[in-house]
Amino acid sequence: MRPGLTALFSLLFVSSLPARAQTAVPRQNESAQTDEKDAGQSKPSLLTPLKPATQDDTYHPITGRQRMRWFLTNTIGPPHLVGGLFTSAFGTAVDRPKEYGPGWAGFGDRYGMRLTGISTGNAIEASAGALWGEDPRYFRVPGKSFERRLSNAVELTFVARRRNGHYAPAYARYMAVSGNNFLSNTWRVDSEADTQHALIRTADGFAGRFASNLFEEFWPDIKQFVFHRSH
Image (cartoon, rainbow, N blue to C red; front, side, top):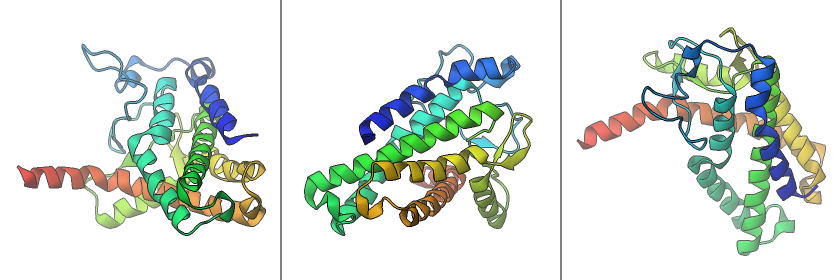
């Protein structure tokens, strides 16, 4: 299957999540919609990132619309698109894999392959997680020690919240990271379409999730500090 078609199917599949969530999960209390719509305001765009959440907040299960927003903003949100520019540029600079070649054409192929993998993995995590209420969001612990916040980023790389607010192994994420990287062997170039490379990409996927958790944990504090100092 061509990468472009895979990305399209991923988008179409995850677009059915709101309806799936409504039929699979009993209707939640209206307070669970607080992130969906503020008083006197319309619902935020599907391309609007979810508000940062902390573990001390009263937990409300993620809604179908929030899953869609999570999928879209973690797939085609500016930080993720920009990140792809750097990784694709590095791959082009070292000409790896060689089948793509150097230059802009090679850069475009590498960028497209990365985006295809991300969209497929996020679609799997969002859709599979909806079946048993796995929440893909990250929950910060501001005010805690640096060591506690660091360990929280590590823990939430491998565990996720369920509808009852308790944490459990992030099975949908395991399926997404490993499944995406092994599935992509069917359309990758020969030099990286094998089990060894799929395992390496899987490890890289969890490392990337940890890095993303670190960003979500500490960036709000860094941003506040920087803007506070500038005033």
